[in-house]
Image (cartoon, rainbow, N blue to C red):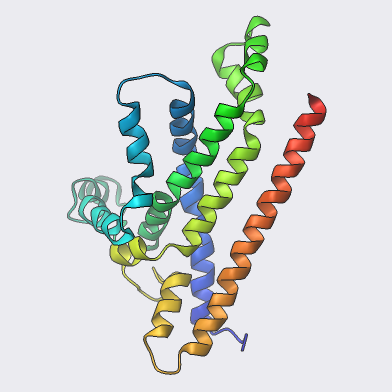
Length: 232
């Protein structure tokens, strides 16, 4: 049953790669958005919060279509990137990574925002009284204290990216070796006679990867919490 075909192995590898790139690319912007929502006061904050969480409430197919309209080869941004930088998203693995990043972004921001809000500001104030500027305080005090939440957000976003299907297949289709991720491969098996065994193999892989990601996240979060708890 677990004798994987080359196409299945390619789908698994592509999913891991796409999820990793998507999370890595969205993490800097996620940190900025989470910090702004947690600490800054500005007009339009409610609108920013709504935009960040919009992919959670929109149908994934709608998100994928919007990505196609904006980032496709005929889109305003997509045509510019292709013409001047040679970057193409539509119907490429890069587009799958972009869709994964967009769909996992709300989970990433929410977890990091909660962690920033829970950080003891008295420690930041103490660092400032010792002469540290805001940037130094952020990287040496705020960021380390928020690390458990950041790890949780990264893993949640990664797990979401692994399971992303609707936006991905709408934006980059289901091209073997290029954009056929693990969920798309499972869907393909369900559409052909006798594909139940292959679908079950990939379903088991998806479950194992998701559980492993959550377990690793919990272990890392506990270790970081103990470390900084001991330092405190």
